[in-house]
Amino acid sequence: MNVLINLTNMKQILLVIALTISFKSLAQITFVDPNTSWEELSKTAKKGKKLIFIQLESSECEHCNEVASQGFNGAVLKDVFQKNFVAIRTRVETENGRKLAEKLHIKGALVALYTDPDGNVLTRYNGSTSQPEAYLEQAQVALSRRNGKQLTDFEKEYQNGEKSAAFLKAFIQKRREINMPTHDLLDEYVGKLPVDSISNFHVIKFIYQQGPTMDSRAYKLVQALAPHGMVDSLYKSVSPAEKVAFNNGIIGNTLRKAVETKNSQLAHQAGYYTQQTYHENYQLGMLQYRRNVLWYYQQVKDTASYFGECRQFIEQNYMLMTVDSLKRMDEAALQKSLAAQTPFGPAGEKQAVRFAPPSQQFHHELNDHAWRYYLWNNQPRDLERALMWSKRSMEWHEELRKDKNHLPLGNPAYMDTYAHLLYKLGRKNEAIEWQTKAVEAQKVSGMSWVSMEKDLNEMKSGTLKR
Image 1: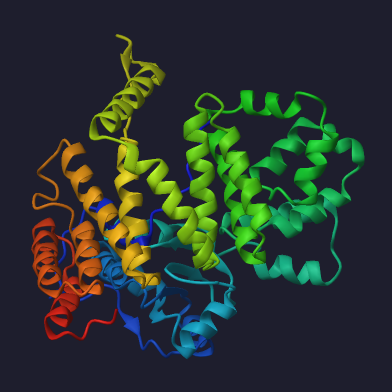
Image 2: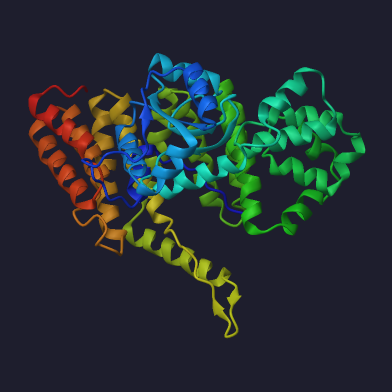
């Protein structure tokens, strides 16, 4: 089953969100002072018998914060949040933001947390969106979970010595419910099971549902002790979506563990696992392998390895591609998707499915890597190379999209990248010209142009940091 690890940064994610920005409207969610401490939030929530909503943001992505502002402006949120939540919006770079992140075991931003006054995370929304319904949906999930056994209850029992297999399984399920890591508990859970339990189909399925890391005891025991063909049978017994979930869990958690421990060997293991899931297409599998390794180098800030690997990766793959080859790729993927649809209705009509052309990932990635070169690289030769990638991303975007009504003036994020690279190369007038185009394209698209316009003004004054 094909698996795709998303390498697209937050800057690019904004382009796939339909926005209607209005900066003069007041937020429908009423936020308390961003410096309000956890103790004050908890006290206020308990007094009003409310839950707590915490939006943790970062200065590294002002676009993302602007998108969230639009989402919070949704009128559908007003009554639910005012009645049920004490809300705060703060940045992880601040002292209070850092303390809140530590309190709730959050390692970064951007994330929306819904907690009870005792610090139990009931649910979370990773990233940002202009769609208020997404925040409302999670609010309703949090409200439905406010009663019953909470995470702190499990933690107290665990600290008091409760380590039975049944308890650990329930503890794992509770953590997974709120998207918290489970690999430490999973290994402990497997250690409590009789050895012959690893032959049990349902036990193996439960382990795979948690996305065990490839260096974990749980994963290694399944590989060593499960009957021959059991894992294959598991994959054959579940839906395509579940197969993808198994693989994405294993790959994603292994990559995150590799980043946390700065273990490049583990990152390569995850990359190889990804490659194996593309057994029908060796070249695409190899492409995914290298994408995952690149993601690892990005996350651990190993810039030397990243620059070398990225340069080879793009020049050996992307720069050899043509628009026609990408169009053929899209057409083949579309036909495969259509063939996979199941009959629906008495007349046997096919079900409608959403189709994302695979070619879009290629220009997304070209832009992403060009932007990272802008952020991390000061060598003129490398910046010129990134400028070429940036230009190619704009060309591909224009050639490949069939609906010209969306982003009618072109892709503003790609123009923004191109302008910044020009500026860093000392080509100020060209940079201003392209950044002006980016701002205009952003305005027409309906997305926030505040950050782009700020950069434009700094380019004009010569104060933009390079």
